[in-house]
Length: 213
Image 1 (cartoon, rainbow, N blue to C red):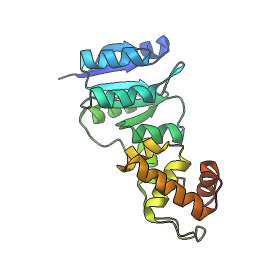
Image 2: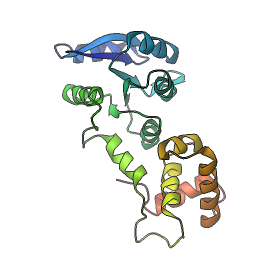
Image 3: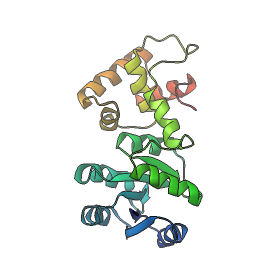
């Protein structure tokens, strides 16, 4: 039985290239879109197994489409794709419920593997950048050689998310806590680190080795 795939990218050459790349496989492309509105419309109408979704859709944000898909068609798997392995994009994709994150220069085998795993609700490949960033986001303990600052395990988790560029709402979604609770953690972090703002806290986190492979 074939896997139904919706391809979303704002460049026609990319959409055509993916179609060519997947010819002869068990993946059937049931539609293509180049903007957020059409993506949601086609997802609801076609009910694909997987949406292959570009992070950037011209002037629009593909992550907005991801969030809307999760609201309107939560059963549909979503694999984000991008030219860049930007940790902030990956972290936001994880927080908003992406199944995987691949690069546009991925091989045919890697694309097919990501689509198959997503369609089967399997974890991404161990090679996946999503797995690597997710491990950083979920880690609860600090490095033992980091600066002696009395942050709790949860505050360290929140700080990692801040350093990865996530908003309070995205942090709340990722950690399954309320936005109000996130705000409290952020204020505690800034106070304990004597940091003027989130950027200063993020710089501390990077320098302390909280963010990395």
